[in-house]
Length: 450
Ligand SMILES: Cc1cc2nc3c(=O)[nH]c(=O)nc-3n(C[C@H](O)[C@H](O)[C@H](O)COP(=O)(O)OP(=O)(O)OC[C@H]3O[C@@H](n4cnc5c(N)ncnc54)[C@H](O)[C@@H]3O)c2cc1C
Image (cartoon, rainbow, N blue to C red; front, side, top):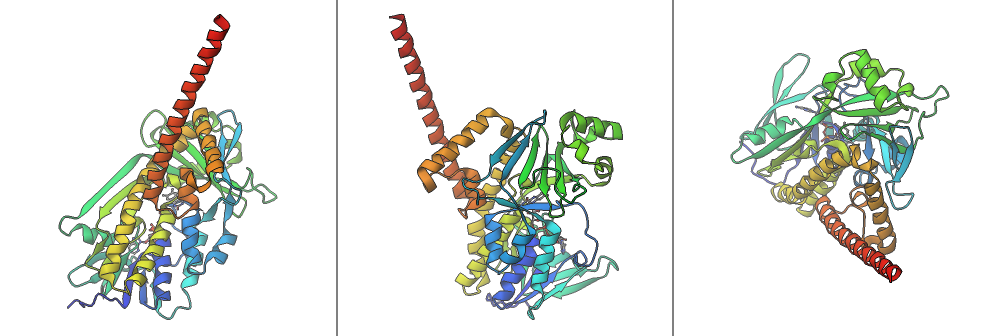
């Protein structure tokens, strides 16, 4: 029989990625009994599986959520500040676009592995927190609240009873699949026509970075782009975002010559810095990018989704993990506000988060277009400068969208709505300025003709 009490004592979390591990820390701090199941072996002792991004951009939302469990001083030394975008033109010219209005508004490059490692380390010493590695959730029976946990090596499955389940098992969540089988469940997944591949710029022989270190480097080429984020060991991890099919696509880059020609033609300034380019290109997997929307995020106060399991977004705003950390922060607030009543807390949580992660999905998609094409356009640069100027004059009454998303806790939907209003004012101001300029020119012409 399922326990009808809605005030949970035990939480079973599926997935010890960034969201699941941070959620475990929040819940353990509140005194709950927490059990975490992760399908992979412990990454602190096992080789890291390849396929997901090597480094990530961490910003204010993520940092606040980490700071709340005392992890700020642990994480900051692992991160490299990135002050802005460094744009590389096809001719190799560099243009700097600051991210923030002030030098302290920076985002941080951090290794996914080191971050997960630090989060897992932080879980040790909690008597009420157990982690089971190599334990894959392959099913959840909602009626009996029984999880099927498989040992990936022996393929044996054992049933585990749970009082409350947190699905933190990523974009293709097994926990969410159980919810998807309930009546009137909304679910949509949309893949981008682009995939991504990770490449490396190694450190120079003296251990220093081969490109200016404190920037996110971008090579925008309209239909595709390359980016590079710095690592602590002096290397950069590059990511090529390219269509799967078409004239310029992964489908065309099938042999060494084609790969070399593509890179020499489009990224001539960086190719000489990549001695393992061909090897990396051929051996590293091509990753796909998906947006996942689903609703509800909770089931009867017994199951709740967090992180990519609830809202995978494309990576172009560098916010997927930040938003996942923010989920943990808000879920913690909701549980406290409702004194552990999970039925109330989970509803409150999904109401506060769903509208915002939907907005983030749109912002991330818009940035997909902005990063590969618009950042190189003079009109875009002019508008951005104007926005920063307006913000300098009007202060917090006019905040650039990037600032609101990356350096504040303004909910994503509110940030997007505010940015739209600001755009309209700016458009109206530009139109008025243009008209006044035209009248002035006409007046000058009139004076001259007279
Ligand atoms: C190329 C790329 C670049 C990105 N860059 C950024 C960035 O710069 N900044 C940013 O904020 N975000 C970025 N993201 C997004 C970020 O990676 C995700 O939003 C974040 O990892 C989500 O964390 P999560 O814990 O919800 O899911 P995941 O990281 O997917 O973790 C899920 C965990 O669950 C485990 N698991 C899965 N299935 C099961 C199962 N059935 N049973 C048990 N365990 C299971 C997995 O092994 C994993 O450990 C990027 C994503 C990509 C693809």
